[in-house]
Length: 279
Image 1 (tube, rainbow, N blue to C red):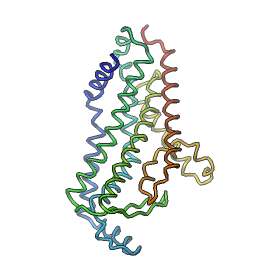
Image 2: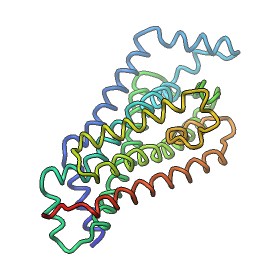
Image 3: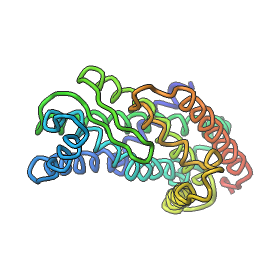
Image 4: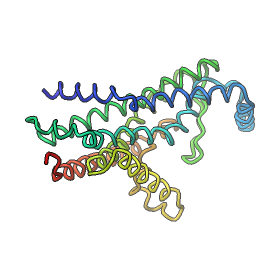
């Protein structure tokens, strides 16, 4: 029965047109960025930077390098938006439409209902991260040749060079850990969705929480408290591109994100449990 309920929840989720907004925007953004690199002088600055560091810059203008650049931009700005959009819809939308009352008339506990919805949101988060990687690599490959990968992330002090096979492996592994970011933001929005508010309000609250956390993270005087800030642990996928992967740092953030997700679910379920929906 749990499998059937999860399947039906996925049917409902992917039957909504707004579920596909994120995928469509990924297609549009990645195609525009790829074409921008191809038909402007943007790659000239990239090659000059590499030349100044002792590398043959032109050899790193490849599909993998462009894919990583797109990933770092879209994962920071668009993935949180579309993850929170779907998470905010999972409960609040059905309450707004009045279908939640009918669902709760059936012999199913509220906890089980929320668990099924949360798992459906987790599956969506995983598909969103995978789609980002596949679409990025596809569009970059249409305009640029295959070759080695160049990664530059100044905030994390990352400057790395990988051959094509190693770069592809790091690229795939980074998207695996990107799922943790998407799922965590979805869980945050899901918690707000359990309140007696509109779906749009749940999405706005989740995005506001993320933005406030990001602002606190950027204030240099709060550096000693970064381990307590939500967004500090979201971008763990960036560390996959270090020459030597700091697994201890990634493991620490994964465990903290797991605690955040569990807390979001427990708080959301508790608030939903005391709501009077059927009257």
